[in-house]
Amino acid sequence: MFWEKSGAHVEPNFQTRTRWRRWQSQTLALFAACQMVSANETLTLSVFVSVIIPALNEEEPIAGVVRECFATGLPDEVIVVDNGSADRTGARAREVGARVATAPRGYGRACAAGVQALSPECDIVVFIDGDGSDCPEFMPQLVDPIGAGKFDFVIGSRTRGQREPGSMNFQQVFSGRIVGALLRLLYGVRYTDMCPFRAIRRDALAQLNMREQTYGWNLEMQMKAARAGLRILEIPVNHRRRTGGQSKVSGTLRGTFVAGARILATLVRVALE
Image 1 (cartoon, rainbow, N blue to C red):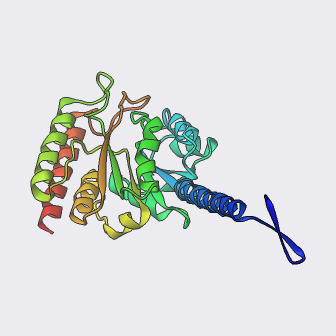
Image 2: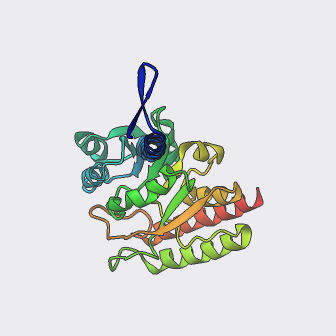
């Protein structure tokens, strides 16, 4: 019989009780699995992402860069660091929702000022140039591996991605390859570029004790991240010609020479530390 009497109670028979327990066990296991997936998704999606954009006389492209960053849906804040501009770079950034900080001239000084201006809630810091040459639509590929807890530092490689003709000169491509080869010898880490478009855990960045105040900032971060044993990932990113203004590095012979000298000095200093 399907039901058996036991005193004043009516209880299911053995077969029914077994089926019930099996269904109950499977339901609990499924519920626990769903909770684990939900927790993992929350972990990835709940990180606070801040974008830092150093900018010097980028009145023309800066608004578009800020808009494209917000359009990815990732940044909780975008900080534009006005690096001593003589134009309306700061004002144009504010008009499209960015917070604006200021810093004396020097690429590294601008990056450091942006770090100082970060909200206390920040978990991941993204650096991107303000000239429109970087492609913010690649930001998820930089941020997601860090948000998932798999990597600490993710850097874009323009030389491995698709480059618009004229977006990088020969010196930039060549120096990136040479520096990458040297860093592989020093630290065993594979870099193919010194791309400014990168993301890093905020606490990991704080541990690097960044000091460089000029164009060597990017290289210093890559060297110290490798030396510190951070989990590093390089991904291909596309690159385009700047969308306005004039390049401070590749636009003039003097700019190329000065940037190259600072990068070389940084390489020697950090390697000998």
